[in-house]
Length: 177
Image 1 (cartoon, rainbow, N blue to C red):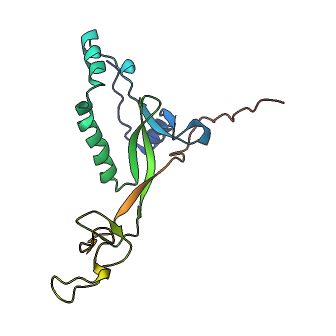
Image 2 (image 1 turned 180 degrees about the vertical axis):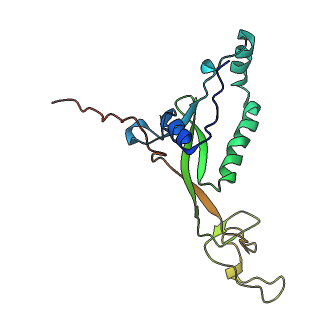
Image 3 (image 1 turned 90 degrees about the vertical axis):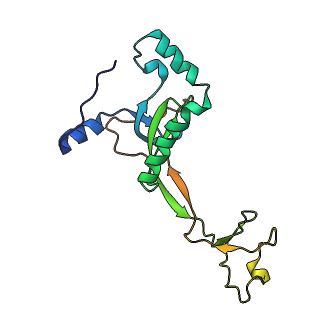
C-alpha cells in the first residue's frame, strides 16, 4: 500500500504541500491552465493482490459502481456553493481535478409545470380563480405558468489556473520555416 501522507498542520506546511502537489491541465494542455489533481488510475493503485485488482477493473464496466462516487463529487460542489468542483479529466478520466467555478442566474422568472417551458416574464396575479389570461398561460401547451420561488441558475466551470504553479510551463515550440 502507498504511504499515507500526513496532513499539513501549519500555514507554511500547507504552502509547501500545495506548491509540491501534482497538477493537471484544466480543459486542454494548449490553454496553459492547470490545477491541483490526483491520479486515480487503477494501474497506479497498490492492491493487496491480483484478485482485488481484477475486481477493480471489472467494476469499470458497471455503471452502478459510480453512483456513490458521483454523489461525493456532487456533494462537494453543493457544499462549496458551486464555487469549486472536482471532476474527472484525462482521456480515460484517470485524474480528479479541482476547478474554479461559479453560478449565474438564467434570467427566467416563471415556468410551466405541465411541459417545463421556462419564461423570462413574471406571471401576473390571477384576478378570478381558474380564469387565466394569455399572459398567464404557457406559450407551448396553454396551461397556466407559475413564478419561480428562487431564481434558477446554471453553473459555469472555468478552465483557468487554480493556485500558482511553481514549475514553469514551457512554451510550445513552433516549427521553424
